[in-house]
Image (tube, rainbow, N blue to C red):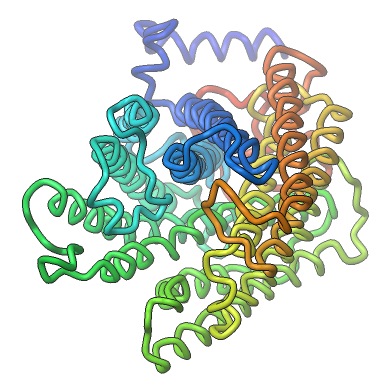
Length: 529
């Protein structure tokens, strides 16, 4: 049997023996698995760059008074940490998952536009280099917050231009990747796989891709207007020339709020694959999950101004955005209840992917509740721009998106590498991450409630203790991610051979392929019953 398998494999490569090897294989590849791997490696690298900046922030805030950085540089750190984590780490990680998994989950041979796929990835490293290079130009990196609000962004040095160009390029990459994902899902499913038979991960990505196509051009428009304000004498956001800086906020957040759902919906998809596999039960309420995801995507367009309650909005506007924001909690709640119902009376085991999925459930739900607190206008007017908001969005983005990325990585590593990861290392990684995460971000709720403002390098004496706790937590959280890197490298280099399906309860198509997954996923499409 083994001989036959190797012969088949060799035959598969004879057809195109002129394939480049070494470095060129990676630069010119059009294979979805190679590109998925490239995305994931790029994302991991950027996680550590963004993490280094976060260390810089927390080191400064360890004690009151200015310790290490000039205030201007501190603002560059907070801005760049946000931009790199959002556009360089979280989003590419999910696109890496999409590239790897979607063709295998729907029984397709590859993505629809294989060459465009290569281009979507190779736009990212130059954009990341532009972004990081902005630290080294006169005036330094963008320092207007990741939201690059005018008028600050219209006044800064050339670092801002580099940032804007980087965002343009990353936006183009996202749009191309999304067109590719939508086309693949709609046109290349295996015979018998109707839309309502697709795995939830595929559904969440289909919806995410539509969101990306809808909002990335909006961001491009906003930052292009900043660019013309800076260099071509327009006055979109210059109050002195009759422009309106608040208009920037409206355009930015019309992109920005769907964007935060772009960063969480694929996470929902991953968790919806992991929980049923380890509960050994089909997902409870599949159809309601699909409808909930779709309604979250639609509602995400009508809540943007909850970021702007303090800008002098009319009361009717405040009421509308407050109620719309509260409404979006309903489909999200439906999803959480469905995950819990899936676990109910399941024969659960807690391997690392499941631990991260359960950690996700618990901590993400908490982040959701603090979001509801921020949605209430009179409360938000007090909490706006304090550390409460920082606590809220880190609970949904770190404990939401990042924990789901970890869960998915451990879940599919056996399929990607052909080896089992080190379980005890994975468990250590989970427990240290969840403990240090809470030590870092839980005190921030109290700092915010007591009135500590965001993005400030110095603070009043009464906030000293909790900031010290948060900084120690951050150091621990950052260091515990080294365990993840060690675990992934160990797994890629060898270890116990993974069977085709290492998880009893996993039932999607990718588990019918051998591990490691063959270079071409399904040359003859499987028939889905």
